[in-house]
Image (cartoon, rainbow, N blue to C red; front, side, top):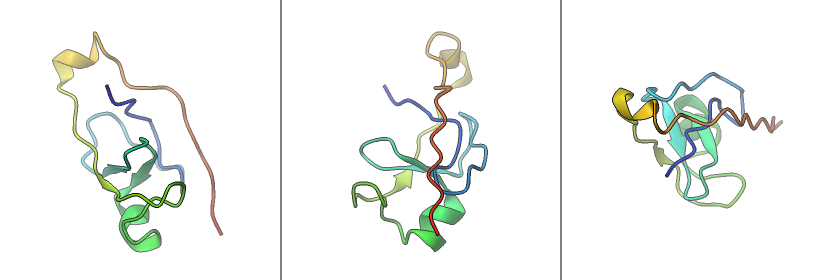
Length: 77
């Protein structure tokens, strides 16, 4: 099950579990749409993997399987 991390690792923008602006790699590194496309050119800076849109977990499933509270922030210059 995906962690659904709450923010962009590059700019720290909030990405709630229902956000359609969240992008992830196969290791679940999480980035906002702007960072994923413009800053990172669709590649994860951590593993080099492809960044794809994170699926949205249905609201009725979030109660039993909540989103992660773990926030990862690795600002890049």
